[in-house]
Length: 575
Image (cartoon, rainbow, N blue to C red):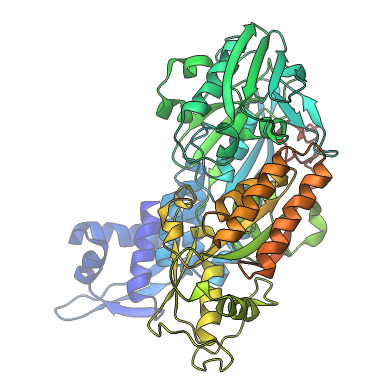
């Protein structure tokens, strides 16, 4: 690995020509080593066939350094060595700095596709089935209270279980840790009856006390979490028996049971298995089909939990590897689509491969709708409806692809803005910065000054949103769409016109009391049309998610969030 890096250093200094007259002292300076060590390194590179060195003796004479291989080949070998050791970030950073090129891109993609995916190995006369998954989001925690990324939520959903779950094909609420439940006439008191002998990964049996602890933890938290509007409506939680728990809401909320199906509401052990909260997020214990057995900076290893109450998974191990490097074949053309929706799949959002017949494609029941909202609470030109209308017209018809923009010609149809020095500040998250930059370019071409700022998603709902003019974000359309819509419109109501805010709050109040899902969706659509017609919301585009997988991988199904369900994946044994 060190020799690879040293070659790339040399090539970055002298690689413009194949044959380079140099002195050994100059080589030593580039490699930051002694004259003697430089001679040893040159000898090792010659043995590898990477270079030729024609030594010239005598004062003032320069030896000839001749490169015999391309830097892409050496960078690829380096990547392969380090990824096998789990030291992925080092090699990727090295490639970025030294030898990024289309040739390397193609070779690396081919190798990644062979490294990741399904693999079997024999251990003590037993076949071990392993699935390796690439991921571009780094997993910081899988504690359901503190996670912010969908990659974290995906892993969390395989380590923990909720009281109930959604059927991925019908959307119906199904029993899970609770085998039955009932609600009182006021639809504020919910009683759940737990399965017996369900085990946590550390061997403790699940009881109602664990459920009480989980929901009290949510109620007492000040975290700006997704679906916090549900947390605020929890009045109290009480264990009626080891296998019965009562949850009392402050008011009826027909989205409550759907919330119980999300990874935010999974059950953690009472006292977090005697671990501090930070440590629990790194070494969790749940009741799910997989347990976390190893975690490093760039690798998370899951192992099948054999006593799982619904039967152990077919896979023995799942290895999730953080690859903070963008491979064209492992990403969607529009940045941000595969990041938030499909942080990793078997192969997420693939582009066309050189061997299309070797891959199968399966549409995920998920799409992403990208949109821009306007902060009309902030003093400035966006309080003028004509300005908002014109901005929406400038963005009309854009589908997320590259667009030609002439930023030197101002659009003569643009409304006159009194504050000529005013700059539109657009806020987004890092995954959407490329889209935001494209939008900013188009607005500059239409005569607006525009700058882009991105903040981590956990800070997105804070004061920084109210300091911005335009806000670029997305809506994930899966079986949790109504929960997401409620959370979205409650957030948007904080920066829209006052009379619109009052209308949204009234509509949301009616929606949460509406038992008919279709009527709830009609209410959400009314809110959207109100925002669009008043030019306070502009939908940019919507794209669906595709998952590619090798035919050797069987049992590809999706959960209610549109992610591949690892519990059902399998592949035929080696015969």
